[in-house]
Length: 295
Image 1 (tube, rainbow, N blue to C red):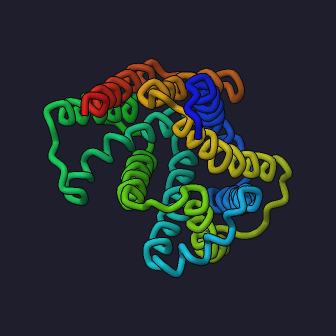
Image 2: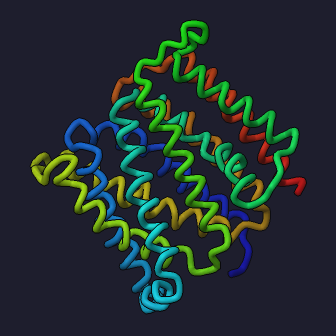
């Protein structure tokens, strides 16, 4: 693919715009569907979308060979994403204000640096340690709404689930780091293998009584944009990019745009502690970004 920084920036901004809307979409949809119902519809939508993309790209035949070469790898990946990761993330959104769940979710890159120590044999640098301290200080500020001394969590379970989801997402990318297969085909295979678990979990955790059209509309939107088009747009941005660092930095726009949308669309008041905590988290991520650029 011929490098084109303008195209890369356009695709990256499209991905950032789509990711900026999903916290609002999650919260609206959860007022009509349970977390597992939302996951059922959204993941099925993503499967349909990725199947069409692979069909157009004439890569659908790769599914069989990928699975036969590494069946246990893809089964594990499918259970992590979409099943466990999104189920836990959606439940966190169900229990917490969207601004809290979304902000806590941005610490997954910090969790990645921690898990890389035991799983990839990497060492924590001084900058990593500073990033971790800043990131999880931000988590504490957000989770307690700034009342650090009282340590009063509105929903301790919601906070734990949000943080656990970041560990799962980091684990997914660690396992995926040595996978040289086509990323879109691999993602489709993960969703195909994870979907039966979602289907089994739906009547256990909830039911199939999904009659509200608003829930369907929201879940389909999530499947198309959070799980589907945004991923494809981001991959396209990285492939076109002459300077991937400039592209990667655009992701830091997303949480702040998301807060504005939450306030504007669903009228969720933005807590000063959320802004403060998010600044801590983004500062930690920027320190990591500077380190990765130097490396």
